Image (cartoon, rainbow, N blue to C red; front, side):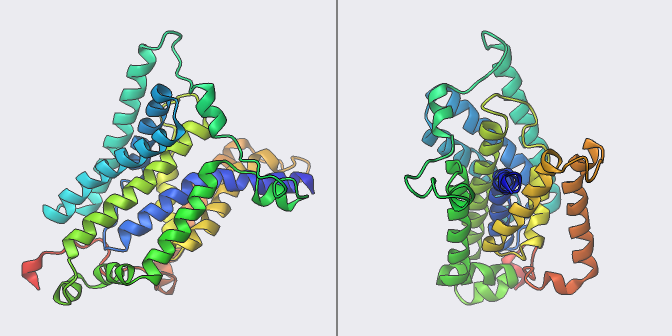
Amino acid sequence: MDLFIKFLVAAVGAGTPLLFGTVGEIISEKVGHLNLGVEGMMSIGACAGFMVGYFTDSFLLALVAAFVAAALSALIYAFLTVTLMANQNVTGLTLTIFGIGLSNFIGVYMLERSPNGTLKLPERITASMRSIHIPVLSDLPVVGELLFSYTPFVYLGVAVALLMGFYLFRTKTGLNVQAIGENPAAADAAGIEVSRWKYINIVLGGGICGIGGAYCSMIINGGVWISDNVGGLGWISVALVIFAAWKPQMAILGSFVFGALRILKYYMPKSIVDLPVAFYDMLPFLITALVLILSSVHASRGVNIPANLGNNYFREER
């Protein structure tokens, strides 16, 4: 029983970067923009968050830096696809290549100038990222460990998912945003500022993805800089949008499931199933591929997909 509880707790932590990436992509797709640059934005956020944390010794500034850096990269995507109407798929893939390359370049540059050839976050900021202990609640048997024993990133991720869900489905602005993703011409005719809200949501979504990247570089790697630290989680996040049916609240469940797949190899007793470690490493990506295949075969699974997803809007064509 104790092992199972530890597995559930670890699954939540492993799924946290996926939660940020998925929610960020949902915000972008709700205005009709399929941004395949999630991996790149997370990589930029990972680099910015780690480096600012390294130099300022401030967890808050690291989070802000991760958000802002990824948001700026999303702004480039928005300018190219909203204003210049570039192909969304090509632009997103380019953003991924650029983001990973830039992150690794800065990381290698800083490593070469480090006195001991490594980059490690200061103890003060590392302590800020440790699991939060809530008096009484954290000490409760079972429930305390399951609900009140996580890092600030986990609670922030859940709060962001719930807040974005409320924004999209419970506010007039959110409904207008969804109208843009369904039919931008009709939304434009109704007086909604299409381009403005496209920019706002794409940039906001990019910033949220960046926080997920900061989790990868600051938590998963134990506060030590490692190149390619996002490790494909951005691609899983894109597929998780489908799994979550374009609902930020459902992304909480989706990220937990895929987080469990990521750490299954550490908790599966070999006496029950003795499989190579490589199989467990492949499992999240295998399930991701299956989600994409099944969603394309069963069209009904994608009932919540924005009708105009992936199509640029040119106002003069109304």
